[in-house]
Image (cartoon, rainbow, N blue to C red; front, side, top):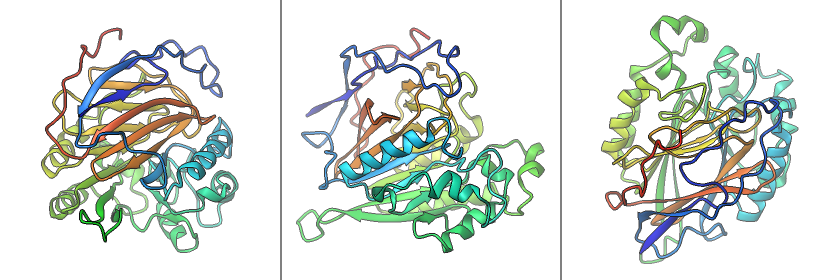
Length: 355
């Protein structure tokens, strides 16, 4: 059955432009509803993945660590309400966890000011799967790893790592559904080699070794769902950043060859969804945990919006729903991603128009 990629409040492919006049603490007005619905993917399911306790639900937020300022506290409250409503299993952080220069150590007050005292809702006390951002590299990277040992929810066991989970009833005929999450440290994969000394003070720099590990990890996995998380986007719709050529060259072929359904990143301070023509992979940006940044349309853009906010993911056996929510918890965009590949419909309009 054909499903719809639904943008509840913003016309798909037409971006919110001209927000530079807003103050940095402002996140822009609410999107104007236009009732736009376009065909998207054919899936094996009859309905979108439900955001209820029968689905596998979690939150994604990035670029948040600003001592509660720039709508960080507002986003945290909205996350708490949403996590409770959908029974979120965990939270993923897409990096830049502490501005402007990471943490100095385990006793840095930023741990309390930007994390422990901000995300206080009971529904957010589940595990946080964390990746490192470029601003975290300005500080003490090993301290963020070691904090895993003294926190009941912070989880960053290494510079990069993988975690397989399962959901559903294993006693049913179809069994439980497995999903592999792979968490990357993309700063070493994106920075020009001439700038390595700037970020390698911790002595944990790597590039080729991490790419080889990623390839092996994804290739060996038989999980039907594969989600990769990193800080830097591969494709981006921003006035500040462009598509990352090193990630396009090094990561995209691995994703497409090993059956990755989605790559989730931060770095750009807004909410985005991209899919290059013919690509079997969806690319999401959830970097709106505090300070926001303007957006623009590219040839790969399905959605980009400047607002502080986060994303909520809901997975069933055959598909995944991804919702973008603002700092009041309002839905601004929703997309459905199929598990199986090769059944996508072409876009019904030429991306790039109106840019």
